[in-house]
Length: 377
Image 1 (cartoon, helix red, strand yellow):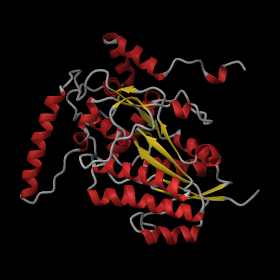
Image 2 (cartoon, rainbow, N blue to C red):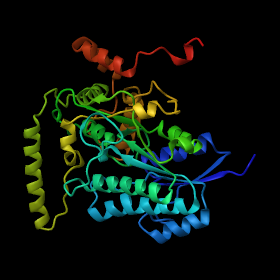
Image 3 (cartoon, one colour):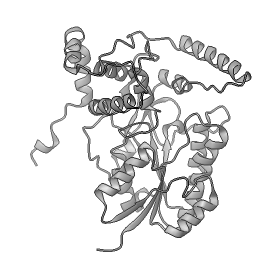
Image 4 (cartoon, rainbow, N blue to C red):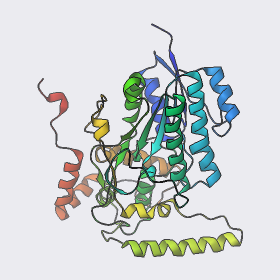
């Protein structure tokens, strides 16, 4: 057996990074030595840290899964989401090794079946997060053309999975429902979004690294095949938790936006008297609750990558996620409103008696294809 490959992953404390590290340590412990330096050992915001660390380790590939919080100020977003990733790419190019960059659907407009080329134009009105992600994609593309950078860009949508230490994205939505802080449905009917399964992503990254000729210089959307209706997801989580809220009443966009504006005015007044207060994360992205955004998987499906878990979706993972996050949040005293003992059988029975159509929709969403392991060759 030859020497192990050494991989450096940035952002190992997050959901995506932690899942990738666990994948390599579980599936390829004999062939890959994956390093995930903490910010104390190598700060993404310091060019000299990156240069010295990479010079010392001399890895065979670099994966960037780091990101600043969605509500970060401009400087932090610039340094963590743009300048740091570009310096990582410069290091990878200097070492002549592959660089895998995690990007986001925040670089895309609202719409359905969006292709990889349909990015937003960079303009000041965008969020700090979206601006920094678009800037990184543009610069990496330029580096590939002019400097010969061997990179691949992976755009993720709404990520779900266990072991996330931050409450954001899907987990923020889940938390709001579990904490019964969402009284009504802040969306409109038939608003679909794409979701990304964190557990599948490392398989794709490993495949890209093993097939550089096919994947170098390209951007791929990595999302589940079927988009998810937001209202259906919210009501399904509510059913699993056997909660009374949110009520199945759709709040019009204008009304939700008015409430957001009022809160923003109050926060400005609080800041003037020296109190630190920010807009709740749910409200920062209120508009996206009312606009569909689904990403095309055509390019991914036409590649040589084969989904290792085709039947796994956000709906099939919900029971596991419910148990994991409710246990964790209750131990951390973050949620106190839900009942300690959830009578899930009774919950399903109630839905069956009062709203059987929703059970049909849930089963359909979970998948109806034949069991792959029982199919005849």
